[in-house]
Image (cartoon, rainbow, N blue to C red; front, top):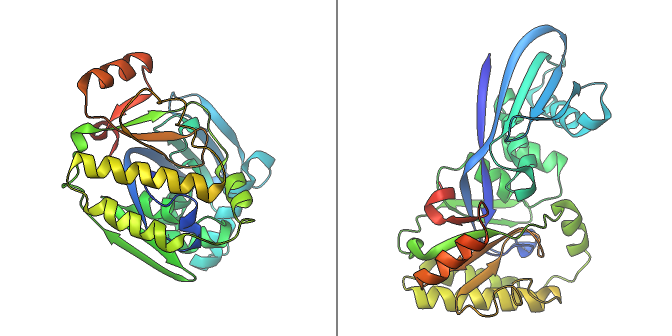
Length: 286
């Protein structure tokens, strides 16, 4: 049996506009997805498990409609790897995070299949997806990265965030997962704008060393994104009584929020109000 693993992801800056070439900060998460393959004589049987061990999807890959994405990834991987015969045997995958969190069930799968076929994961991604590719880059990364895609040129730079006050940075799941592919389709209908402003904000956020500066920059990013999308921040009403840094992550309106909280009592309150969905930086970031 051969085994592979890929990291989950969070995009800290330039969500959406990363599609148009804005520079972004992306980070791999401690939790990801695993794949185990046992070669055999029968048609490839796929069993995907959720993080709680229950079966998510299963069936013969070449025959099951609910495994169409898997089949497509394998076919494209075969083309890249110049392999003619569809693999046979059994595959077992397992998510390490709840699927609804949006940490990359698809991007980790792309990375895992690329590892299995010993091919470039980003090449496979761009053959099968309209996303920016930052999530697949995170799946293979061991630390935070700058990610920028301008036309066909991709720049991935490993970075360190030791200068940030990470002891005051938290993440909260908002409980309303949005479908990333649909958000991307809707966003691509909008005019391209503000790219340089978001790239500048990314650079300044990266360079921030004080909590006050980071809070101001994160809130500026949220305000600019609100204007850019033409929609109110989903965090405005939720955290209106908190003088903190707050920023939406992922598809706006339901994924995770990044919070910079200077007062311990506020941390205690939010942790108590959101058991199981409120995390410190060190709990989830590689």
